[in-house]
Image (cartoon, rainbow, N blue to C red; front, side):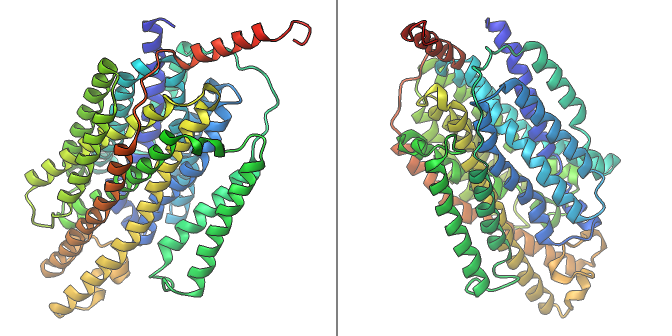
Length: 518
């Protein structure tokens, strides 16, 4: 493919990824209002996000394995259709249960776009040149993840929150058309496709059990209880079963030999930490802005622009620097330091902190994410054999999303308990019963506009302190990413694209195989 053809195909790939991210992130600023309108609780708020992350996590390695077996162009178009149609169905929800179900279905499409986007870029661009293009990819992800909430806030205030779920439809149609016209890949060598359904089922059950335990322990039952024992034991047995099945499967969902690759292992550790720090804290920013600071969804989105700017600029500039120099480790170390520092700084905020300071802290946090997220994928792809490109790339994305799912679920449980206690204590201090918060008491998300002044101050203080503590929890987790990045062994970036490597391998095989055997 010529440079122009690469850019044309890249536009379709990036547009597809933008659709997936936008469909997921556009509702984040309106979630407090959605859950309030549907009569949901803090647990429902958490699970609207966790359900998407759960199915994204589980489906990512399946899509990645399929990418090594069948037509990738068809797969990415199928993922687009699933992602956007499920989003449109979510817009018709009249209960939190239906909303959670549709968001879970949406995560399946998002898993495909997460895995296939980076694999397709690896197909058409060499590792040495991939840095600046991965920078563009990181920038698109940043704009979608952090700019989506801004768009969602505007739509919610102007037309109602349901329209957030339909905004991705025209982008999806455009992405499908562009990919069909511009993406040219060599035909996949036909062979028998065997999907490891047993491994996929065991993996799904193990992750779901873990997240259910994290969500409900401490509220529905004690952390030390027979329910906890059953769920933790079930998770551990499931992990053992997954390893046993994957070690024998002909086409494992997560090939175990990948874990003999030092770069893959360290990238996975760093990606888990990035996922926990990024997803687990960004999700609750909307609650801070709206429930601790009394801002509208539109204002909440506008106030996250510093994070958009930090992620966009850091991702783009670091990608260009890596392509120019061929060195990526120093950039990633700086990104890990910024990520840890940004989380620590965000842990100092409360309901009275200057928005200028909050914006500065978000800029630091966003810059760290921009320097780390896609460059971890680049470092991994640079060491993978072409036959493992799909599975290896998806495995790193899988663990990043798993970290995010665990982070959202765990931090959501922490926030729910902490805010509930703070509100009960605060209301007791002013002599007001918990019923003043509404029919759900301290367990439901309150509507600030309906609360009297003293009660509103209690709620704002509870969410200001509670959300800040989540960032403090995320800071030491981000240190794991720093340690892992420092331990990475930098490998010179290759100059052959994935398609070139595949064609070279096929040519070598043809030359080495006698004509009679072919």
